[in-house]
Image (cartoon, rainbow over all chains, first blue to last red; front, side):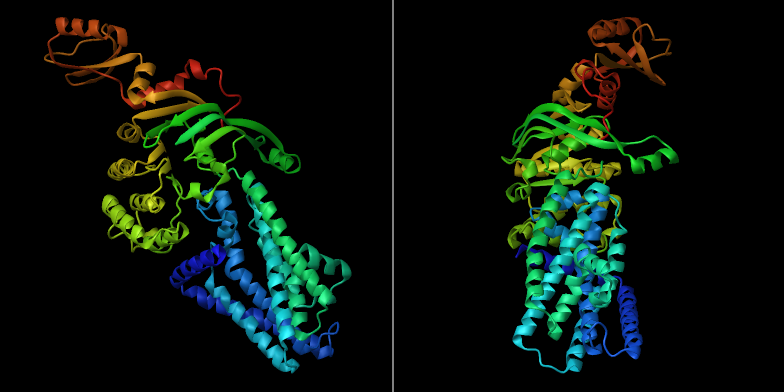
Length: 261
Length: 334
């Protein structure tokens, strides 16, 4: 409840903020289009040479690209900007203001900055998913839709927990701005099913940087390739990860000493 | 209202020599040392008191303020503010206190002031009616009309600070922690904020703990001052008592009807401006010196007073008198 209330408040502020700089809309639209074009071009090149890629047909791979845009959009609208601001607040000492508000500081720090134009990626993602489903040509039953939503929620939660842990490190290291850039480039590996990568990288992309759970698993659910064991695993991880991230956050807050006057 | 016992805070800070080589070495092997920022002191503040919290830079003021407002965990000691232990950060506590830092702002930079106020209204869940009343009152007292619709980035420093203070008080807190609330403001803006704080504290019976480098703030607002130095309590009492205790001098100002000669034999000459001479005289001799001045010289006017507070405070810190001489290990960093 608190989460939704605070999220809504900051969406409102985000809208007010971004309406002042409409140029951002254009920039973001161009960026999203470029992202889309390079993703589709990549698919085109691959499928010019082969019928399937580690068992995925072209229309199914579109679902992966769709989830890639969708989850990326969700985190880039609110989670990443908020956590980036949080890290800046730690460095400047302005986190003091967040910590003295009568709301949960973790929630506040996670929704404080909303960049609405990044929502274009969410729209692009949903569009790609629709196209993918139409191309695959099967009707999605209630069970599959439910599995997809579950996997998507689980994947987003896992990515959020991961980003929270990264951001929380700034309580100790103070200056970690580049950490999200590294995450972003790892995330881009998620445009392909993680099955295409060699085992060591697959492990990294699943457990170290949870891109596999965020993208491949929901896409598998949508196109009906997901085993219930994997789904349960994803959900279990989505329960444990935020709990651990929260513990780590609380240790960090305790360690916070603020910037001096 | 505020009760502090044996409060201590030790920071572990990285330490390294100057220079590139040392910087590189410290990447591999970090050395750190302990810095005692607050070295154990007790203080009690009652409801409705406005207390000035003084000390030189690095004395531990901000650290103490942060522990009292729940931002920092102390190394040792007990603190109760409004019946709560601050660093547990219970909502009931946070809802009733506020923190204003003169050198940092919480208003959102790019949007009109009133939208930032709305955000605080929602965060503190202030009922509509109460919010309207408070906003009207603050607008009136701080003269915010005309500022509320402007984006924060378009405000002057003084205007912005008035809005910061208003934002921090929308929920009508009972406990105010003000860290240099008038820092960098011009005299008019300082006076405005000062007057406002006094009015607010009186109207709502709020307790205020204020740090400031401007003695005018302290003189105007605080009946009581708490002085810390090297993290230890140096003085707790009225401003007048502080001056009596730490200034062994009186200031004697005379206007002469005639030429000003060398007055060094009466006391230390602080300044001579045309016919007006200011002398510093040991307190015990003030009466005798005054008598001699009146007998010896064509005195048109004479007044005896305490030296300016600034001067006394400066003396307290630079001479580091008895109570603090055993304090502090190492240098206070924060």
